[in-house]
Amino acid sequence: MKNAEELRDELAQTFAQLKAGEIKSSEAAELANLAGKMIGSAKVQVEYYALRKEQPRIEWLESSNS
Image (tube, rainbow, N blue to C red; front, side, top):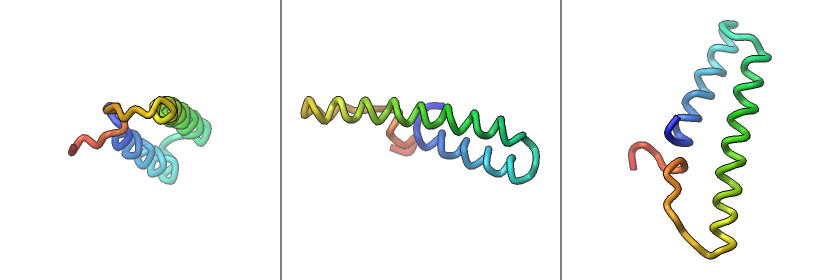
C-alpha cells in the first residue's frame, strides 16, 4: 500500500469481509495489528521531525489525490 489513504481503504474492506463472514476474526485482528504498527511507525517519524523542527514531505501520509 502506497499511503495511509490506501490503508484506510484496506481496513474498510477487511471490516466488510469480517461482517460478511468471509474472513476469520483472528485474520482481521492480525491485519488491524499490522496496520497499527504501520501507523505507529509513521507517528514516530512525524514526532522525530517535529523535534528537529523540520517539515519534510512524508509520502506515505499523503493522499494519492495530492
